[in-house]
Length: 420
Ligand SMILES: [Zn+2]
Image (cartoon, rainbow, N blue to C red; front, side):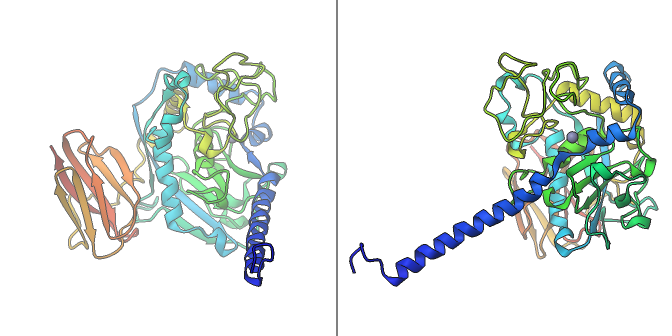
């Protein structure tokens, strides 16, 4: 049959392609439909509703002027409350582990896309020395995975326009889940949100048991739905939780507002999508323009890659002054000390030149964590499976502890290795 007379199968093939394209378009619009109906972040709106008008400003001045930073490294126990109505909202542990890794990577500036920070801004790119962990002990000293699952009859929670005090998702009595001690745990609630993708409670203006972060279940970890595919809604909200303001100063296009951070350019309004660098505006009219790749802007996840040095200092001062419970929090440690590897263990760890090799008879769950001899988390690897190879190229000579699990509710397998 000539090509000018397509047979049944080629017509059928074309129809299939057409149908596939149609389905993709429907999927894209249904995803974007919810996205368009949601604002990126509800924190600034909450601040206007919840606090005295000048409180935020005063608080920020105190971060900037403070020289009383208690220490340089911080450990933040996290408890995640998955408050779900449908099974799709009951996101798996693996996604929550991804999210914790993302927080560690972004706040320590271990993120692979640091190379995308323009050279004009890389000199002010900052990093904290901070470890987020899923809680390993409850407030009552019991072993925990740090993940709570609470079924609710509420099909969705919250809108900035209908803000309620106390916040329903944060309380058992209103279909949510009660906070763990907000002074020593970072409480994160995952639920079906209407109105916003996430929101946070900057320190000081909220009821103690309403402190923490709420995030829509769709944007946790590494979701497949464009545009927030790198878990950075949570990075942005943790920035607020540690006192950072939006980079444009929430002044709706004026140049008079400020984020009270010295090394971020003045910016008129929020940025969207992923602009081409350099992007100038009425407040920063010459190159390099505004810092749209900052985590405290509204650009897409793949567009973002830095906090600045002054933002990191402000967060450190904020923890010291207003979230000082974290300086002595014990939630990242097991209720009883672990001095060596748990025996018997299904995981065998061997060391070869340039490689640490984990072989297990059962699947390794969650992140493999590498600590140095001071107990500082050096990096995480989240591969899963029964066989994991960790290249040690680039590691400084010294003693390291490799922590891995086959059950997240049990103590980890810990092995001491020497790299030389
Ligand atoms: Zn925000």
